[in-house]
Image 1 (cartoon, rainbow, N blue to C red):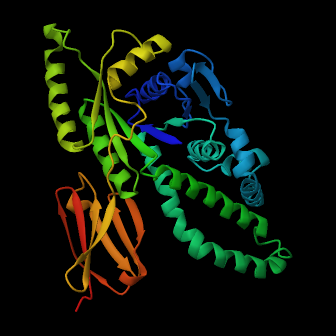
Image 2: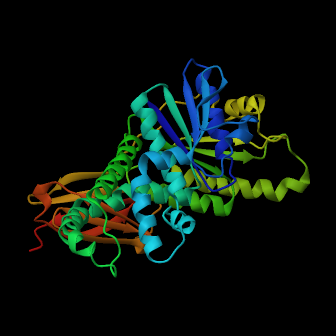
Image 3: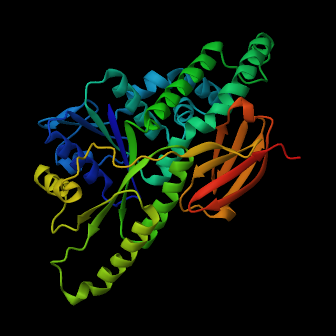
Length: 391
């Protein structure tokens, strides 16, 4: 199943573009579900009709869905939430406050991404178009599987064994908080595996991609540039950039001259920053973009003759090649990354790359575990890490 995830700075029009993509794909006979993982649901506003937690048909071949987080909590988080609530109650919080505290920040968006996995398992549609949260929240969620991996693989088994040994004594000591039962650890393992399943779907370069929606404005372009770098860091493929709300040529009033000049400058920056990724554009319409008629007009503007579900660009995030007789070079596609923001370290077969506030743990082949990182450079948007014997 083809999956397209739209993200962008809040207010750039990603919900409208996501809905328009689904409508355009349905025009060629595809069955498409467009769903929102953003807690600030806007799909109902875009389609100008109420949309609930169950997929609802908007037009021939198009269904829309806004998440029901209550059912997702029951399915994925209830046992963990119950244990955390018990701990907070032991610390003196009342029952209601304990339940609220047990819901970690960002869980709403995370449960939305877990629904992506559910739809892939069910395979009822030809394509899934995801209206994701703004870029900052989306990046945190997409990096979560990689961040959790080390804990789940290295620390969780130790904690599970320790809790099993200590639990009989702790249960008799009222001064100690309640220790989790083995079922809580098992629930945590299942939760991680579900999140990792979402990562596997979204990093499938043959069937899934991210599309950035931007406006030709300074702060929006800057955030999108950072997002593009971080998405590549975690191996999520960006196959298109949609520049929304460009002033049309028909507007000639002098009042808009400076705005037009500004958009032209930022459009040039967008083209330079994201090349060779295709850049799709949509004009600023003379009406609000809601309802089927408006969304179809937006789809015509964005896609023209482009097939909306086509994989518009492919590119690997990193590659490993032989360098000399006994060395290797690991190349990361990190467009727009600044050398001062990049930090590297290596331990065994694990290579740690930090760009700004985001860190990626890359597991290298076992044959490279003995090698040391002997140097690094950034050339033409590529981070090149040299591995050798260090002698």
